[in-house]
Length: 183
Ligand SMILES: Nc1ncnc2c1ncn2[C@@H]1O[C@H](COP(=O)(O)OP(=O)(O)O)[C@@H](O)[C@H]1O
Ligand SMILES: [Mg+2]
Image 1 (cartoon, helix red, strand yellow):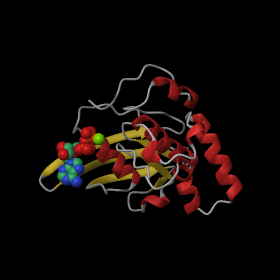
Image 2 (cartoon, protein in one colour):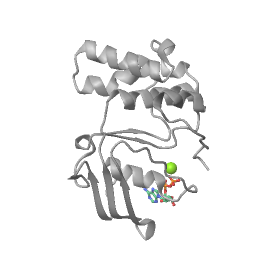
Image 3 (cartoon, helix red, strand yellow):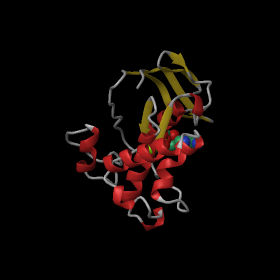
């Protein structure tokens, strides 16, 4: 894990200002939830941290390194998207393994990481299914497992609870009372 520092980050889309000026420090090992009305800029900020969008002003630092000019793959980040993009033509196993294959990890390591994260997310019985044969909640768990399997420095999750019940989050140590973020 790594500390994230957002310094004076703003984002405009043409004449529209989506983010004015955000200052935020998220410490190493910290779990932070951004809560706000629909359209307030949560996804925009996550995309800027991940490098899918660039800020119009300000700086993003991760682990003491300025990253706002770096491509996403050099930021040590995994992101779970709001629409949990799982690949329909791949099995659950291969969906979770996807990023690990890109990194060309040895097969034994891939199998070990996929198995471990699938157990954590309670989807170990589904590993040979195609994602088209899953419920929305199961698909969302696959997307979270794929991010966890990468063992990134930072995991960004955009409304990851909208299809999940609290029980699934217990193994991650995220106990407590959660409200859905999709307001
Ligand atoms: N690519 C874009 N072009 C123009 N406006 C955008 C774009 N992306 C987001 N917005 C606008 O920026 C604001 C924040 O959007 P978003 O970050 O998706 O909000 P949230 O995730 O909090 O619901 C919204 O008003 C949205 O319409
Ligand atoms: Mg959003």
